[in-house]
Length: 409
Image (tube, rainbow, N blue to C red):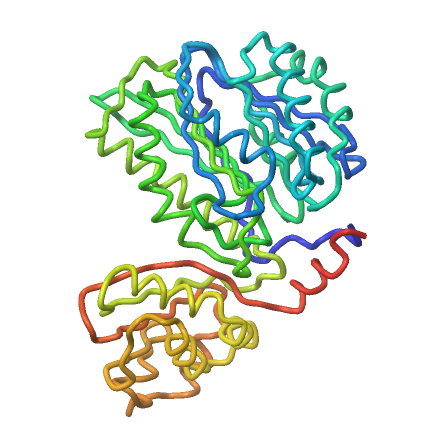
């Protein structure tokens, strides 16, 4: 990597004070996988009886670690589990070496933790196409095991970062049958963000008792309204991984009817998803794209993502230009049904276009002033039906080029 990347102007003021999750311990270390002078490996160990749910990239070139996790996620066991993550090397597009590296790491971790290999989940993030120096990870396992602690989730969030400019964490406490249940999670992600089934690297933990199939159903449903509704650059990673672990340490059982828990998990997932967008490579604006009046929810999402992914829309936002013509363009190219003469567009509460024409009351100065804000909303009503969607994105600046032009150097 080149020079240090400056902190995103959209970053939160500080890492949040997350609730401790009974039954989860963390450790980090400097293994030198790619980076020097910083932690680049994270281990999280979950107590016996934990259930695991997950969602993973649908990329046709997904990494060996993703394929391994996919095979293990539905495995039911009363033993503990562990998640081992390295940053700096994605172990993707590395052929047989990649598969062997995952096997080498999972076997060593299973031995160090006295767990079955089927309960070891690994993730790798970073440069694609370079063999993973797995020995640098495995030689650190004894140190990681000794240093496991329930109080180091922030360190874990920092260790999994690549081009991120800040560690990402979110948590909440909800009540189930009047009893407190805690949820806390961390994420990494900044570029190559256009999730398709999951996103970046995300690890969420709860002390609730949750059946594996119930937890998986919740994660899959909420994923489609959170992580699958963000985009930074339209590029889907080879390594996207979302893992949710329920330790059961609270003794409080959650079922498919536990609305409060479901909402708490949704809030944590959405907060982490938003933080990834706020840390988009080179981003200076956080943008919500809202579409109503589509023929279906699917069509609404197609239109919303076409707007959110358009380089012309994103560069206009970066330049603080209220160029609604670019939104019209994105809608027209999306492939979903649209009618020019029923289309209306708002920037914030300013209606800039109405039913196929510039709004009669449009004020350029007011729209230009609105575009200077760091947080923006673009709303489109297609006037065709009841379909709706909301997605989130950021602007596209020269900073994105600066970061990615020398990513491997």
